[in-house]
Amino acid sequence: MAEALYSDSGSGESAEDDAKALGVILPPRDDEPPQDIEVWEENWEAFNMALLMLNEWNYAGMSGAPIGYNKQTMQWYFELTGVKEPERLLAEMRAIERVALGILCKRMSK
Image (cartoon, rainbow, N blue to C red; front, top):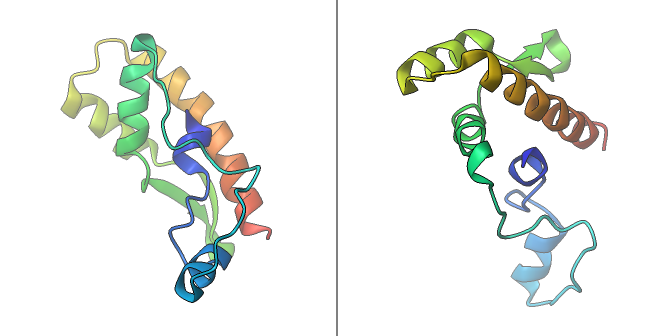
């Protein structure tokens, strides 16, 4: 789930954008994220929370490296959405956070 949410979707300036502007059709990439993802019912709450948290990151100083979700904002979202099992959802969000951090840090190192 985190892989699909945080993988680069080609939404910025990229080779794909340049090719499109020039009318060039590029072959499909092997690392292309899925266009559709299946979310199991038991993961639906974590998926929705991950969508809310997409832009709610804490960053490390001048480097701008993401270091984790803003937990105060997450707590507010938990209260706002009426989360009934916050410990369970926090554990699921931490798993998503770990995967997302790996993706975001790898993207920064390019």
